Amino acid sequence: MYTQMSDGIDGNPNAADEREGAFNARLDRAVKIESPDWMPEAYRKTLLRQISQHAHSEIVGMLPEGNWITRAPSLQRKAILLAKVQDEAGHGLYLYSAAETLGTPRDEMVAALHSGKAKYSSIFNYPTLAWADVGAIGWLVDGAAIINQIPITRCSYGPYARAMVRICKEESFHQRQGFDIMWTLAHGTPEQHAMAQDALDRWWWPAVMMFGPPDSESVHNEQSLRWKIKLFTNDELRQKFVDQVVPQSERLGLKIPDPDLRWNEATQHYEIGQVDWDEFYRVIRGDGPCNRERLQARIDAWDEGTWVRDAAAEYARKHAARSVA
Amino acid sequence: MSESWPQWEIFVRSEAGLAHKHVGSLHAADARMALENARDLYTRRNEGVSIWVVESTDVHAIDPSEAEAFFEPSQDKQYRHPTFYHVPDGVKHL
Ligand SMILES: [Fe+2]
Ligand SMILES: [Fe+2]
Image (cartoon, rainbow over all chains, first blue to last red; front, side):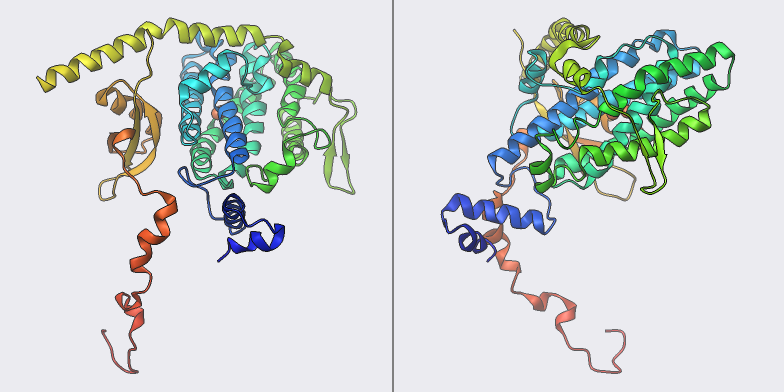
């Protein structure tokens, strides 16, 4: 039996080690872990942190784009943006649902977001100053999200992997509608072209930072790779993003705001200049341009919705009582 | 006062002729709201023609630690499979 393997390796044949050995053997055989299965506490905690932060990012991520729903330049653009933002709400809920299978109620996760204990993606702490920002977000931010998320469809935890399959199916619409906005602006009047360039100038570096700190500084990388919660390192994913986006920017006729950007013939990859990681850490710590505003908007939405949630619960209770009687 | 709405497991039939399949969960105050939320959450792109919602507390499952013993009775009955039997050369329609 494979549980005995751990005895031989670490010479410590107690029950917890046997279970851990069986767990690792299961990961090695690429058998998914499902919600009631035994798992090391550290695996559960890491997953819970990652999935709930991912959920929070989807929910907070509705705010920068929601800012433009009432001011979209046409009825069709407005309908598209509404559908896109609604998808993001859906992504948040798929992920809360996956996280709840780890035994933590959703209210607890939401409370952790509101208290500032739980983080969300740094990208959503930047402002959307112009309509072109909605294009840049779809193209770059959803584009980066796709590169981040596709490998997670193969991660070791079943509920997370399944949620990610649904999400990835919907993301490509997000990316394309963003690119379509950029394309239209880039081929419009000189003012519209300048607006698209300005949005790229402001969103490029924050998008590059979305993949997290460089591998040399990333604390979670190695263990998560071993647990198959992560399948590629931050730098590998970032490289993939750069290689995809640079040619797209050329087609758009827009310039990536990086004087050091160059093509390396030997490696067949683009190389980017120095990322301002101080800015990244500043934004993660809470000092980005919109951190306070974003969090306050979430807290207000929750507080102002309390009476609606309570009324619906009371209605359900009265209805149930009446149907019994 | 603020309380959490109960959690519901959601099952979607993607087309007539197929069984309902579990797709995830959500929170709702009652069954009707669970159905409507499930429509908005899990069938935004024609993924379903029917939805079942079941309160999560009403779902019963075996404990994974007993799975091996639980399914053990079916492990040693190879004769339940047609491949167990030898078919002599030349015998057709068997
Ligand atoms: Fe999303
Ligand atoms: Fe998206």
